[in-house]
Length: 348
Image 1 (spheres, rainbow, N blue to C red):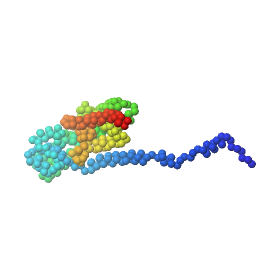
Image 2 (cartoon, rainbow, N blue to C red):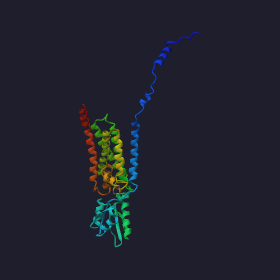
Image 3 (spheres, rainbow, N blue to C red):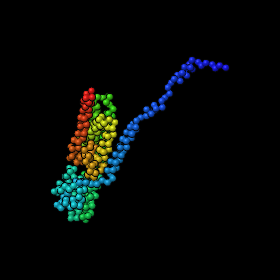
Image 4 (cartoon, one colour):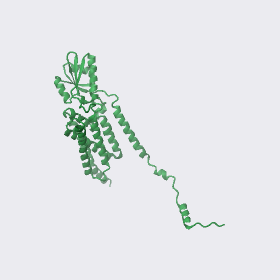
């Protein structure tokens, strides 16, 4: 029996199915993302975690005092201390106990040592210098006193505030402000299509002032953990936020996707780990000591400590360091469009 002919729609469907090209097996291979897309973020993440742990844990493994400044009175005592403790201390001879204490209160030294009767020694420390530094000094001088058969009396003449018993408030404030500035600069990288350069600069500057003001008020008057005068503290933290924000924006602009991880390593990892707050600067390895005061977090920690406990005796230098970071980064960002125009003109 004859099979009925297929209807027109069915015949058309069969023809289209027959003529439709089958997918090529190598199309999937073409759509496979390049190896770099997988490798780059993985390597960046591994570098960041290794650097973070290496800095924060590694620097605390075996801190060693190096040239810790101590003011020493009495004619023969400086020579004896230097001979006994070597390069662990940096002896500052003082005319009398009053001059030695003045040096301690100006933050020129971290401790003073004087005689206390025929068989005693008196050690004055500044607890505001942090537990790691004061503990190291007490251990060194205690070892000398024990070897010399002398009784040691210790007094903290620049103690920490009641609400900062561990002496870490300055570090956490600097870390928080640095982090806020980093986030601000990272977000500004994605605003090039919405805000022109001038408006982005105003955003970074204005938000930095807001970050510094909020941080200073919360840490100072609100919580009482940072007893620095409010206005100088606001200025210091504003400069820190601006330094972090403009530096992050600069690195992201010039280095592209790698810029933000580089800023993470520079500011949040290396900068905070070597700031001298958790491990005193005089106890850091040589390489860490070299960069400690030059990076924004280290400069900020020094300024916060000086403003809080030493009447701002040495706060000017750190403030200048923070201002230089912010200003130089802003200038380089401002030059970027001009450099791009010149490059485009040379290519044409």
